[in-house]
Structure formats: structure tokens, C-alpha cells
Length: 163
Image 1 (cartoon, rainbow, N blue to C red):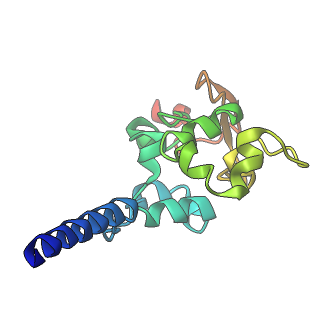
Image 2 (image 1 turned 30 degrees about the vertical axis):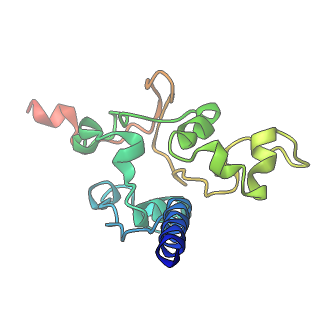
């Protein structure tokens, strides 16, 4: 009888531990993302709240914006990054990693998720860092990726190449 009770208690204890572990997974240390290649030109993001938070969590520039090799190697900065987000696509992009069922548990996200707010909160970046260049010399349409404005400054003057 004692063995049976002990066995039942052991099984119940093990099941409780398993259930607890599933609800409270341990977090392993995460290797911070290496954004050094992007920060060479985009140094303003080195201390930007959103970029720093994601970098510490192992999520780098390339996770959201693609490798952007052509953009990175274009010293004149005419080539756009592989991925850009128009305002109306920011929240959807964030939701690809930040699931709404998790966000719903945090009351701070209720206005964004329900659209019911005294203030017009529409995008994740309304609260979580602007994640924009303070001074832009080039602008692209973020949907078509076409260059829409350009200051005209180039690293190499093309006329000097033909001399």
C-alpha cells in the first residue's frame, strides 16, 4: 500500500514539474546579434531603443531588413535595403515574431490590438522607438523600393572616371 501511494505521489509530482516547466521555460543565454556591418553607415541606430533591445535578444538588422548586400556595398547609397516597411506594414511585420496571444496578456498592448485608444496608436513604433533615420539623404518608396528623393551627392563623380 505504501509503495502504491508513494508511486502515485511520485507520478503526480513529476507531472506537476513537467507542467510547470512547460509554462515557465528556462531561457538560455542569447548571443547578441552582430550589427557592426550595418552600423558602419547607420551609426544612429547604435543607441536607438528598438535596435538595441533586439540586438541583445539576438535579432539583428538582417532579420528584418534582409542581408541587403547590394545596399551595403553601394557607397553612393542609391540601392535600397532588401526589405523596408511602409507605416501600414510595421505592426504586421512585428507580429511575425511578436504573437498577438502573448501581447494580449499585457494590458499596455490593448489599445493597439483593439484600436480603442484615446490617442491614435496604430503602429508598434508609436511606443517602441521610432526606428527612423533622423536625417535622410535618400528616400525610397517603401513598397515599390523606387528612389523618390536624392540629395545628388556621390562618393565618386562619374565625369572624373572618364578623364
